[in-house]
Image 1 (cartoon, rainbow, N blue to C red):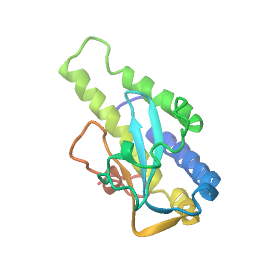
Image 2: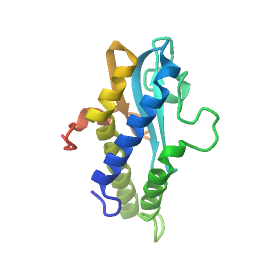
Image 3: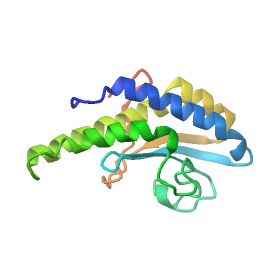
Amino acid sequence: MSPGVDPYSFTNKLEEIIRRELLKRSDNFSDELISALAIDCHPWQGTIELCFLTPQDSVGKWHLADWKYFQFTDPEGSGGWEEAQELCLLMQKEWETCFCDGDSEHEREQARLVAEKFLRCCATALKSDGVQQALKCYKTTNDFEVWVGDPDDPSDRNYCDMVHTNGGYT
């Protein structure tokens, strides 16, 4: 873990924001069947957004930007998920501290570690009991899943598969 933002505090705050958002918006999706909930996280841009996949989405499974409910937390494209802005700023600030003396290999490695830290925080929040409980307000498919990936990594690995609900990592 890189120094800076405490990952446990960040995760707990994000979990609570996601839980509240899901409960607040559940009536908006009462007629939708949901296949996946994903977080679109870009630490280098300071953005975190929630996205829903439905069975009607005929695009690649993890091509979030093509989903009908891509970034449903910012439906107007007005500059981000308002409730998560404080966390987004903390994340971006920590990312930016990696770059102080040019474009060295060390800085790139530090930036990778910071990105991974926040992607794991997002995954842990999605798998938390509070978020899982809030998802019970939605109609989900039998193969419903949660997903967090690195948008710059074409491997499509799911960070949710690498974390435990207690915050530990595999």
